[in-house]
Amino acid sequence: MGFPGTWMTESESVIYRVVPKCACSTIGQIMYYSDHGQFFDGDIHDSSNGLHKWAQDYSQAPIERSVKAGKTYAFTCVRNPYTRILSSFFDKICGIQRNGKRYRGNLVPLLVQKYGTKVGGDDGKQEFDQIKSFRRFLLFTRDTIRWRKPMEPDIHWSAMSGHVSTFIANGGRYNKIFFTEKFNDGMDDVLSHIDTPHKVDLKAIPKFNESEGHGPKRAHPVEAYFDDLSMHLVWEIYKRDFQLFKYDFDNPANKMPIAEIDLDEVHAKLGD
Image (cartoon, rainbow, N blue to C red; front, side, top):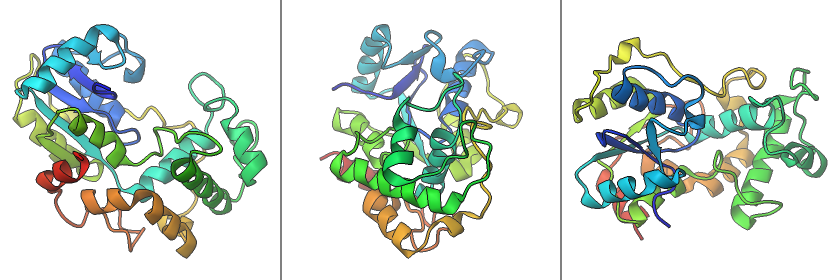
């Protein structure tokens, strides 16, 4: 199985396990900058050189060697499950993607037809009932994750613990897991533990949000989207994420973590 979703600087200064919708664009650009003294021109997900990625054949041997040796600092970043699934909905379902098309071709038409989800028309700009449509999308999300129907779950809404676990299951160990909501503190701590060819000044780094502008703006506060049934579905899908990464399930309005992550607990529970 190897180390899917794992990126590493070419200087082998640091290893990062990508978790979609958790500041991965900004993290990738920081890693790229730390090696090259400049940002990748474009979406870092599109880069095919300058940064080792498991999806690139030539990168697999150096990534595997570094992970197995355990000497390269390894980290990942997580996000509140409520805001993460909302972000996935507005970006991937309601939004028009960089290529000018809908995400994954027939996915949105399937959602419209089978679940009655509205997405703002062909261009994603028309008014629609965001709360009702999101809740129908949430039902679809649960179906893909629980029963893998009507399709396999997508990486943007599959549980963070699933992404994080593959790195552990194949012999890796994280030195740090930090919160998107405390990004600068977490990333600063990572950078303080590694030596990079180019110094990174976090205060001067722009936020790279590859999904920004794809979809309509969220019209309501986070908690408005989650009634009792929606919260039940979210718990069914993301129970482990709330427990391991210390987010507040009982209050969707509170996006901040309620405790620090216990790395030993994460490794013990996700290393089975």
